[in-house]
Length: 459
Image (cartoon, rainbow, N blue to C red; front, side, top):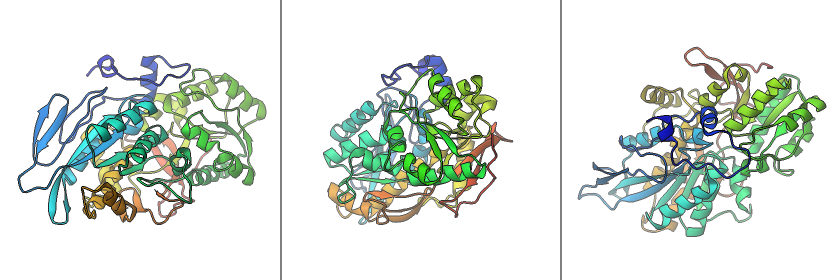
């Protein structure tokens, strides 16, 4: 599939100052986009892919299967993911994960009856409005029993809101818990009825970022926080970075919120230079960080350390930066070295990463953690008393206590209702041997069970 055809139908959010399509795709690192279960492939746009146990039948852009007579009714699971658009890097491993789900657990046994599973996949196209729309379609048209979703608040929050409004059980990850909970108006005294989330929190990323900054002796922070759910949560004066930085003895320079896909960051860079900022931080999508960092180099802004969320997570994003990406630091939620195993197959994190590299020819990437939403779904479904009662599915979800490829999941542990925390560490990108970049774990202050693989170095 050629690049021109591959990007047809990709809708980019209506925001100021977009990059050219060619430059945007290069920087975002969007590779050949497809999704399939059991080998089926669907293109971009509105198409979805479905699968169940049994013999597969392909019709157009979808794959359906016919269950054997001895099985119970088909269980439908929706999965919303950004396969295209500015945050497509978050969905890059999802096609692989979906295939692995189909191979590991195409059915679930509930009370002695075997039910085939159909997973229906919808591309959010990195657009929050579309994420909510396709979630509504899955709920109202496909009549799903359960929703799965991952990949930043832009995807998770609108999907979770649709599920909460329509009484559909929802399991999510890959969004800091504060944007998921407080960003959706959550009340810690009440919580939500239908939506359950597992991931780390801003307190974890703050602890790891500041540990790395202290290690290189830097104290003055220049922050790049966008006007989106992530940026507003990170910049929150109560639950975000500002109060924690003040308490930690850091000086914050915040030039204010910016719009995603901004082309010119000269104003922010000028403020950071004038203030003598030694640290660059923020939470930025890959094309925005690429613009900011390239312009910083051109304009002579050279901090001791740069620690940025979201924009530095993926090998493809780093390769788009070239040599100026070496030494950058970021949050790390999953690596092949994490000491966890799959509840479906017993495979380790290293096994899963090796299989991904073998099957795709690409370097492992952190969103392989999305594999765990299906693990939790299968565990909860197997404990559901009445599969035809959505409240019964939720009852099973909220009593989950299990180990996954992402770590332990237990919603009784908090820190607020509907949230279970998974571990976070800090990492630094260095020159690799097998691939251009390698990610070293250089801070584990919030997760000492995850071994360090390097020491943080200043830029």
